[in-house]
Length: 271
View 1 (cartoon, rainbow, N blue to C red):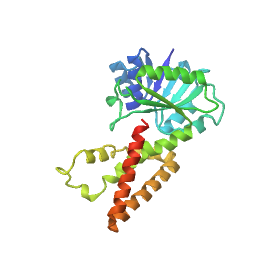
View 2: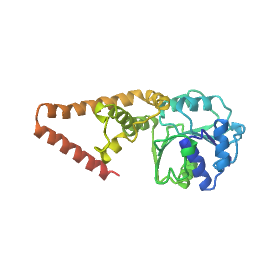
View 3: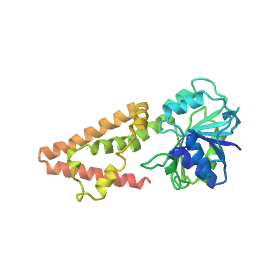
View 4: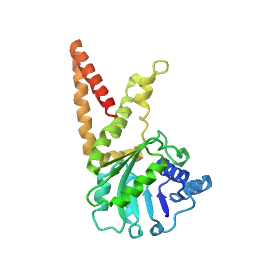
């Protein structure tokens, strides 16, 4: 079984290394110097040949590049092509806009770091993590079953199946909204001179503030309706806290805090 990992950044590089750890040898596609580094480290066996030679192709590229790769290459008949982008609806619509000779499966590994690039990739990035697999009535069940087997071998502890639309709605809240809030949080002038005044809370709130706008702007834009809805919901909720404080309503503030605590406890019970 021949495997290609297209895109050897943090996620793609880690996928290549995790695949090697569990006995699979992949080839790599990326810029020349990146592929060379991946070969020298042993993460991939070699530089990608003709895409049509591969049985499984993991497309670990940004959304537009992923669609360009899937739309402008020839694939083996029946090959499994799995993109691992952080947005799924737009990718799925693109793939199914015309007939394809490959079996498409949308995937999204729920793991990452605050840094990027092959140099930061590691074989254990996915250990204990979840992999989301999106499917619809066109998804090939045998392709999904094979990928789930490989993902389990790579270290993923949970496979979650859902529709592309459900994925995008959930990710807007659990990931993309959190990045935007963190990014906005650090813009306060009060952040200046923070040394000596911070504990875990500040680190938690600012850890993901340093998003690469060249990557994340497009990703957010492709899921903008879901993110905008979550932002509006958050702003509406924050206004209640602001009103309680400005109006001197201590009981209302306590009610809001209690409501949040109980909600968090209920969410913890769902794990």
